Length: 459
Image (cartoon, rainbow, N blue to C red; front, top):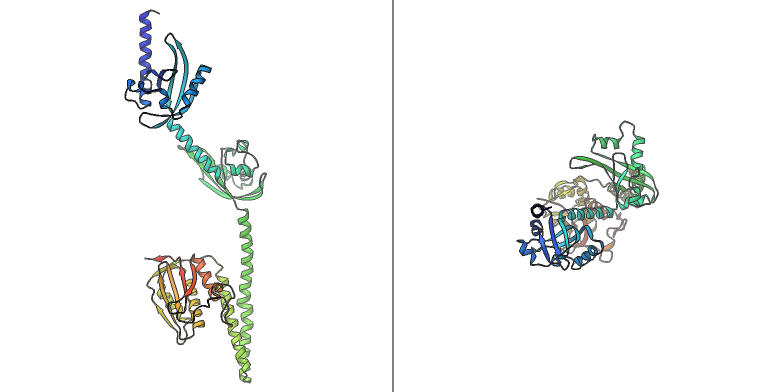
């Protein structure tokens, strides 16, 4: 090659390097830049080639020792390929680059020649993926991705532990859930295949089986199609063990059956003979006049009250409520009509509306009113007023006994010998079904006061 041809080739290569979008550089071993292309100048945030050459190469490494280690490797191996590290530009920005370096010898000395390409966006995506991976692995739910054949593509730590193995070992293995869906399908295609084909977008169910690393378990699962950039990439499965929950639900069903039987006995089998006894008491009074008959009548009344309170308390075990907007003052007046004593008085100071199950709120107020009349007498004055987050019912009677105040909401506890001990228990039960709190305190006039808080007000 002639001298002219060599100069032409050199100029051609130089023009090509200057147009490359990848940074190209040449530096001495001690870090002085000898030659750089425009892309490399821009990469490091310099204004010009001369501006960049004023700085030592080591100044740009986020890890001060990274360049020394890099140079040692190049000197040892002659080449380093696709090395990734973090740089700090002249603008103060932190960027990630992938660099390839070679050692070159010439009459002028030994140099480092290489290329650098920014990969900050890729590193951020990788970091985001690792964050999601850590989050999925930390889940206390089983999570995985199946391919179109029902084999594991991705498995989180929780699911791998269920199988008594590792995530890597499960990759590529067939899923017992998918096999069961295909075996038990009564129509064709099966639910998993319908997800793959896009006929349905989601499928839910329960999977009961023996897991090698966990034993017998019932898993409530959901399968959904995984779509990435418009393309089908598999089926995502998320499952939660519900073995204990199902056991509790079955136990609750049995308890409810026993409760229904109890309610039936109280409502019919006890009330019927009690009605007969009350009828016989009236006949006995026609035949004789005895003080004993009054005691019998009071016993009958107490039995009727007990039966009514027991039935009310049993019905309160139903957690279903239907909250609506209720005028507290209006429902207080309605409740009072079924309770009022001969000389007792109700004062309604509340002007608010609340969200509540109307029937149960009426039951709560009736029990509070009845409790106030029974303990305060027929001349008691009862006040219903507003609180910042609820309401109160107070009276000017004798108040609650200080020593036993903590026992007021216990089942069967009463300060009166003829009391049933269920009045305030029913109040607390109604409140709990709404998510409210109940507390007993002293009234402003020295009587008793019940505060109900946590109530949703209606504007």
